[in-house]
Length: 218
Length: 188
Image (cartoon, rainbow over all chains, first blue to last red; front, side, top):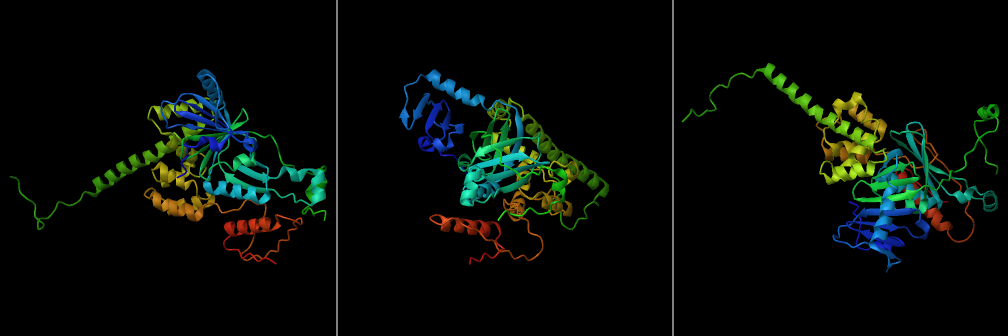
């Protein structure tokens, strides 16, 4: 069981909104692309906004308006819906740690979802040559039903904040993905970083098809 | 008072024709349960792509029709191509929880377990959980592929001098050991 602890929301992010029976937590500096929305078991909560644990002087209507704006991010058509099991989420998190990765990209590939974990800094030409960084990309294929072609890139820091539990992902057409752990009333809204890792391509098709191995320049 | 039956009395012979008819009725009805779960799962999956999904989901929960946690289980079932294969429906257990845990099993293995009858309509949740632990996809996220029974590989990794190299090596060894428990990792 991965129950979400709502008793100390201020520790989870930089700003916290509370409205009747619901809350929203905005991420820290490194995870400012993510908002956590959930049900609050504390009843009769007056709308409030805390930034860095300090209560802000705002009206109830302003807080409710902001919360409704967040909720509206969920009202979008989906490009894809898939579930990552706890084992796969752990693997991706391990991979992020190992590669010191900056991004995680998910995309549709022939009735599958492919997940790639990469460090975008490695693809910067000067840095790559100067520091002999590898161009290693880890990937994971997941068999699922897909709607259409899509690509979505997570900030790796935000991905590591997801619980290591089975999680349902809904890739929205508005550039916001909703990740909901199967066991819980919490949703993680995460914004697309719109970054795609470079891939090796051949300028000439006839040359490309005759190459079986591509040797490392070293 | 009516006559009390004793063990010595001969019971009337079983009418096998009526037994077969009863079995057929019950089987047909029981299979409809699986059908209904899969159809509901598929319907939820399709509506989940609509922009009103968050409202639909909340209303299903609020009106006590399907709890959000159960909706997520059903959507998980609907995403699995093997479970949604109409040719395999008669082999599936009629329980959403059991079906969801089946979706955690590697696709090729799941198909084989269903065809062999290892998983059948009477299979229980606890049995499927054990199978899911045993046969969940073990592939590590990597572009490497191992072909053959016994493989020996030497991996040379150059780390920049300075702090952090030991941590990175330990991280790589840990990942290898976690994902490939059968592989011996030797550091030189």
